[in-house]
View 1 (cartoon, rainbow, N blue to C red):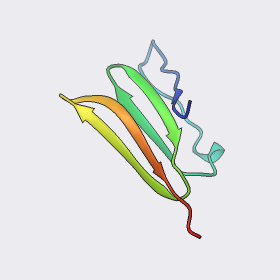
View 2 (cartoon, rainbow, N blue to C red):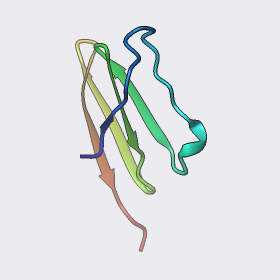
View 3 (cartoon, helix red, strand yellow):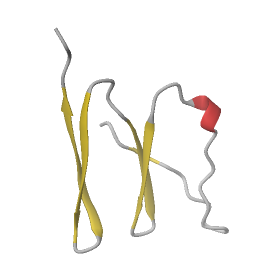
View 4 (cartoon, helix red, strand yellow):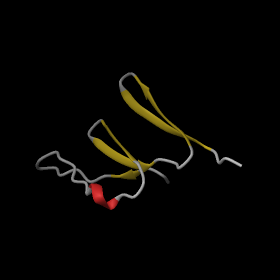
Length: 66
């Protein structure tokens, strides 16, 4: 699975991320008290789909130049 859960500190409601730990672009999504992250593809599109103000899905359309 591409999307990984991020731990939210229940006492503070905060997420702690080390920005230096990533060598690729990362997308962080927060919805309904949950947080997830995913690495963006090197070539392609990433579409975030919402419905009634809620995150529903993330679609990846990847390609490679030939």
